[in-house]
Amino acid sequence: MVDHLSDLRSHYRPDIIALEISVAKSKGIAAIKDLRRQFPSTNVLVFTGHDELLFAERCLKAGARGYLMKSAPESEIVKAFKSVASGNLYISERLRSRILNRISGNSSEEEMHNCIDQLSDRELLIVQHIGQSKNNQEIASELQISIKTIESHRSRIKSKLQLSSPNELVRYAMRLHNSTI
Image (tube, rainbow, N blue to C red; front, side):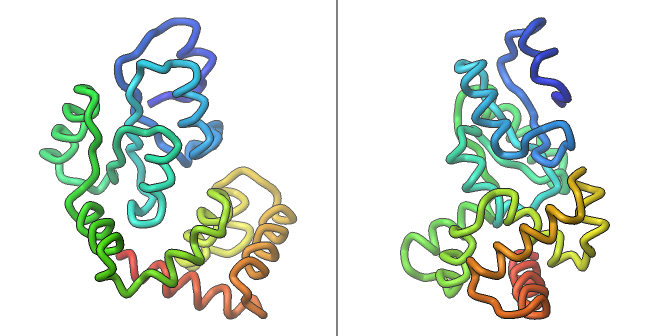
């Protein structure tokens, strides 16, 4: 795993990088774009605990060649690394099925997905934490940002999703969380 991009850049020319998007020193999904700029021939595999149904498409659009959850079985981890190291894309069967259903119009989640698209990567991450019943202090601590910043994000999220109260935001986040489990 990469902790400091500058350390990586000065010493190595990697074929593949496994990136955890929530590493505090990382810039989240923006780190993928940075890596692709600095190492255009390097393949990035996002290896994370964040739900693929919420974050994988954003990571792939940012330039990742694959997305894998840490809870995946060992055989799938090996398969993902081999696939991405060979220059191929990798996503789980669960995600592949979800994307194909949405594209073909067979998904009942279209409205929720459209709402999610309005959120920035950081806002979506905060919504995920809210859906996991974390309070502002816990979220701020985990993301290493201030509580005021979390409060500001929550306000923008409510506005973007046209939610009128903090309770509505919590219900939305819980519904989103439950739909991705």
